[in-house]
Image (cartoon, rainbow, N blue to C red; front, side, top):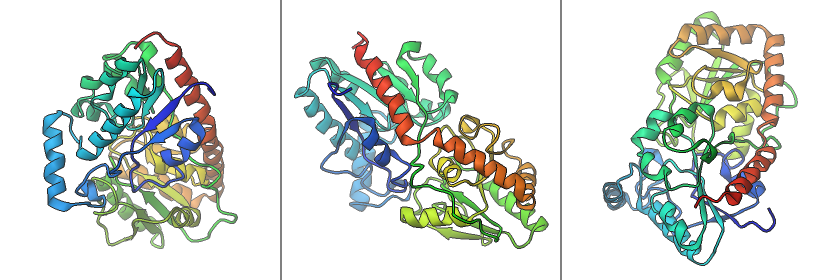
Length: 360
């Protein structure tokens, strides 16, 4: 890898903890990150992200979406691609990894031919979302698609040969997200994030749990408007936190007894890995790639849209401390398998395979 030039492309999502997103991973992947003069993904606060230039930014980004045509494409991403394209012209035979292929690539697959470069992209969204995002328009121009879940494979098998599909799981910084030194006595359940969350089922679960154990506290991070996602949770029985520092997020995980995640769908999920890394037993929807990450011993997985099953699992863990401890320890052990350092080795092997291939 020392002679291979790897460049990672893409801005970060501001609501991601820097110890679980790509900020931490990049340092272990053996490459350099490319940035644009404007690092904002969108210019007008889409999905509650920080607005830059308000209504003018909205009109500019909507124009970019109409011109490409790629849903969620924007001026910010165009600038990143432009900077990367210029970089490609000055670098022959390098590999460029688009960290969020779902939204952040349009032209680079075409540019690679000029200097014999390679372009790969990681995709995070579920199959139906990939279809809406027009991924078929750009996939054929990539040297490889990197998936974070086997649940995405079938979609890409219709677009690429098997040798151009790599499944490399998402990771977490297990050195930062650590279990608490001592377990708290208060029955606190935490949920984090809003993307693809099924909050209707979650709210029904809250009611059923409180009927069984009235003193349970529910904590939600990043679930309201402005919290960083595209769906919101409103419930007076929940304590809300938004825009936390990583250290504050860690403290909330460590004071909690159980992590609950009710999904419409999931491929990989930062919050799920963070909670496992902190040694929390998991109650989650058994859908998409969730079981690939949780496994069979780190949590209780429930059928989709079934608040009764989710409440039953939560109450069981709150009442059975030994089981909760067992699942939490298994979750921590499993999270260690997804540590950035381990997955970076897999990623570097993937880079080597792409660079060694003759496709271009």
